[in-house]
Structure formats: structure tokens, C-alpha cells
Length: 120
Picture (tube, one colour):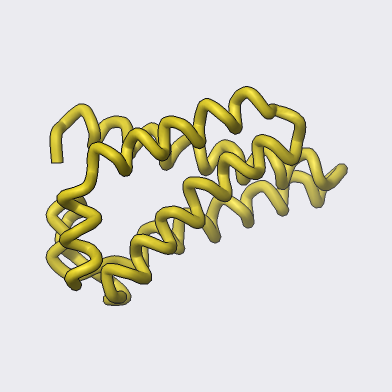
């Protein structure tokens, strides 16, 4: 994968985390606001980091919980587009649209990785 596309993927991951955190923050008040935001971030980061395809060249190659390529692809799409949806739900529709378009662009540039994932 090209270095620029890997950077884009990393930034998309951060943006998705921001979407989930923004939704959690805006959905609660007081102490629960902090707890729900922290919990949302930890859950999404855990899903992203723990479930992996062994020897994925775009990651460290380690897979704490090994999953098939199809499951990993669905997980990635759910988290990234879920972050975009979260922005939309809190009223940041332009941010959500731009994020969704960047996700599509990233995966369009990642056809070799998608093929690899689907074969695992």
C-alpha cells in the first residue's frame, strides 16, 4: 500500500474515533458524558486493534484475535462509515459527507488489499 494511502487510512481512523466520541459526548450530560465518551473510544479502538487478519501487510502482522479477511473488511467499513454516520447524527453533515467520500477514495486506492482480504 502506498505511504500516502496508509496515512489517509490512519487519518480516517482518527476521524472515525472523533465521530464516535462526538456522538457519545453530545448524547449525554454531566459525569456520564465523560464516561460514555471514554467508553466509546475504548470500545472502537479495541475492535480495530484486536480483530485482525494474520500477516496483514498493512498492519503489524500480529493478530491478537485472528479473523478472516471478510470479517476484517466488514469491521473496517462499519467503524469508518459508523464514524461518518456519527458526525451526521450530531449535525455535522458536511463533515460526514467529506469523511464518507474520503473512505470511498481510500478503498478505491486499496483494491489490492481488498482482494487480499477477500482471499484470506
